[in-house]
Structures are given as structure tokens and as C-alpha cells.
Image (cartoon, helix red, strand yellow):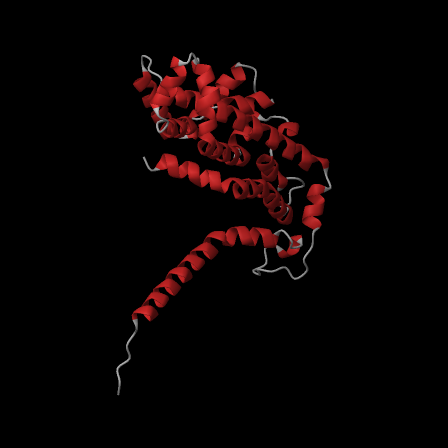
Length: 280
């Protein structure tokens, strides 16, 4: 009887199949909550909690109820305004601070950089009470300013831009200074156009953070007209004392769609920005 042997090619195919099988299983486990949410949003309210994957009687009623009211568009508008203002502030201010820390010499530069790094390590929840007292003292509570101003610049974005800007040759900036260009002209005409991948990364991260933020808008927004989508979803289950699971699932799908679309369109810049700043 001839013993069974495995050829080298057969071994490679078996290893590749096992790797792809493991990756497919990991992807399925990771995506299952999202898949269940999407499928569940098409179930009638009475079916949502049943131990079934697919709806027996698919319906668009959950989406129709949400999109049929004016409140959803108001919450969506609030989320868009806050996210766009936060992105604009972070892209501009983080790049300016990062440029100063990477390319300019001034007294206390190392101390400022150390403060930025320490700020990254402090949990945001710890700052909630002093931040709210400050915002309330400035008269920014219960308006857009209170939800935008505290997040116009982030320590993580400053550090990421600083790391990216370290790669820009100093000789390029010195040549511009010799030609008579000021620091603002150098920054806006030379430095900023070279920071595309890093700025796209900052924009995506800021958009995700602002869009998903629940606690701060919940604390600052005391009027229903200022609610964002996550806050509105949190209150969706408290309308008449019953929990509208179908509406919550449909609202969750509509809430995450902008994030998915933004990431799909900008993922090339996001990966490039992370790769050029995170490996140093």
C-alpha cells in the first residue's frame, strides 16, 4: 500500500484556504451586528425580538415613520452643521499648531508638545464637568457654539499633523524664507497643499467622532431643536413609554450611512495618512 503524501503545491493551497477561511469567519463575526441591524430594520415591530435572522414579512414602515416626520431632518441638519464646523476647525487649527511644533523654534516648544501628549492620555469623560462649567460660563450652553467650540482642535490631530510635517524638508521652507515669504504664506501656499493625506485623515476621524458623539450633545443641548441624531435615537424609545425597536434599528442604519459613505470615498487618503504618520 502506497502511503499518502502531500505535494508542496497542495500544502500552499491548504494554507491559503485555511487563512481565507479564518479571515472570512472573522469578518462575518465582526460584521454580524451591523448585518443584523440592517436586516432587523426591515422587520415589523413585533418581529424584531424574535430569534430569527430574516423577516417573515419585510416592511419599510420603520423608515417611512422616521422619514415622514420633520424632526429627523432637523436632527440630521444639526449633526451635519456640527460635524462640518468641527472638521473645518480641526483641519485648520491642528495643521497650524502641528506646523509650529514641527518647523518653528520658540521658547517652551518641548513643554507644549509634552502638554499635547499628556492631553491625549486624559480620558475625555474626566474633562466633562470643568468643560461644561466653562461653556456655561461663556453663555454657550444650549446652542451650536457649545457643541462646536470645545472640539475645534484636538490633541490627537495636532500630534498626527506634527508627525507628518516632520517629513517636509527644512530646506524647502528656508528657500521660501530667503525669497521673502512670511510664515503664513509659507504655511498656506507650501505646507498645507503637501498635507493632503494627513488632512483627509484628520477630517475622517473628526467626522466620525463628531457624528457619533452622544454624551456631550446630550449634556449641552437642553432644547429638542438642538438634538443630534445619536441623541434623538437615545430618546426614540421613550416616546409613549414603549420601546420602538424597529424605529431604533432604522434610525441606526440611517445614522451610520454617512460615515460608511465618507469612509468609502476617502479610505485611500485615510490609509495613506495613517501609513505615513503612524510608522515613525
